Length: 99
Image (tube, rainbow, N blue to C red):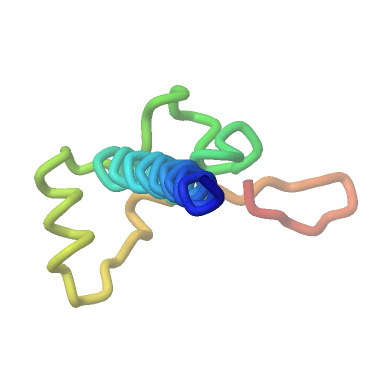
């Protein structure tokens, strides 16, 4: 009886761990498919370059297939500057800052 109880508890712990890992994998597959990083997903409204996009939009989204190909197979550095165009704004102090 004791062995069956331990076996049952082991199964419950393994199922909880498997469900946690499965949810993490599904979440990251969604992030890959939408072209988002975890930080962009969590802090979308606080990131300056993301404010102009809707809740489910990303400037780096190239479509599901291309996003997966880029994530899995792309070995070169990509120039992201066209996506992150910023303009300089003058403040009363005379210094400039990026917006």
